[in-house]
View 1 (cartoon, protein in one colour):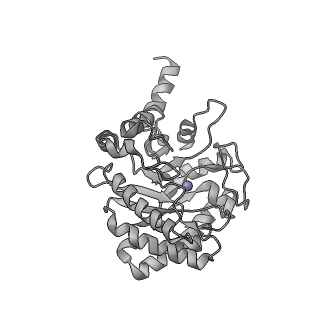
View 2 (cartoon, protein in one colour):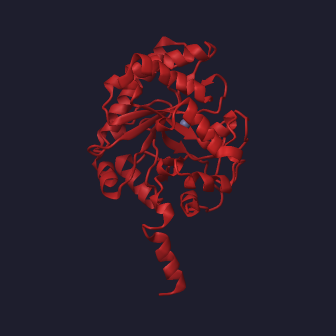
View 3 (cartoon, rainbow, N blue to C red):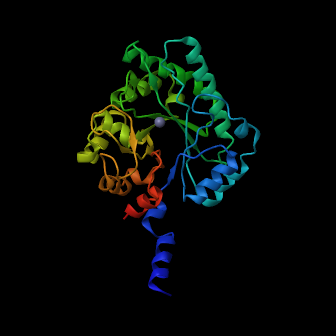
Length: 304
Ligand SMILES: [Zn+2]
């Protein structure tokens, strides 16, 4: 065997550390459930995200009319997942308008019911959403409305679906850029609906937390310790693994490709080797690149 063949073989074996990462991208549902499987295989995704309907709220006729069996089988036979579906951006459980809140609640229920059809027996799918924006009603009211919304959504949703609150950058009146805000939503649920609370977790977005003012670049372990104290690491279920275009405390929420933002490649090496984080599904949401660097391969290559 040539030296190159040996190296290729090495990088393809299951024992390569990067193989064990549950890692993928945000994939398109244009070609339905089967299309998700094809894209995941083509891009070496083992956990990934997708929108259960258009990001602006229109239902996906394609997903609703198709048999999700190809995706269910792929998760079972290839060990993929848990997948981390992303709710449309238009949902705002903390909105001022009762009609819009009702739309978000009903749509989240429908989306979660659809997602439950794509879960293998005994498995889980995560449904990540942006907690909401209080649009001037104040943070406490926003937190209250989000907790109330979840109390309506989750009892109508199969147990195989868990809902994840995403850490936000703190743009405008967003709820969820401080760990305390996420903890306050969960505290309402703990007090009023423990069954609902047990099915709520958190997605940590590396770009958002840095933009929000948590210095993961200088002190990742310190930020995780703070998260543990305020929310509890047992609630941390998934990562959005994005570099940050504008950086610390910018409150901008602009993703950059891995290594091309303010966080940099070494930081992501720390993330994929962190004992707590490396077990979680990691989803890239980075913008398209103009070079041909494969970010999934890059991240797998950083694992030691
Ligand atoms: Zn998001």
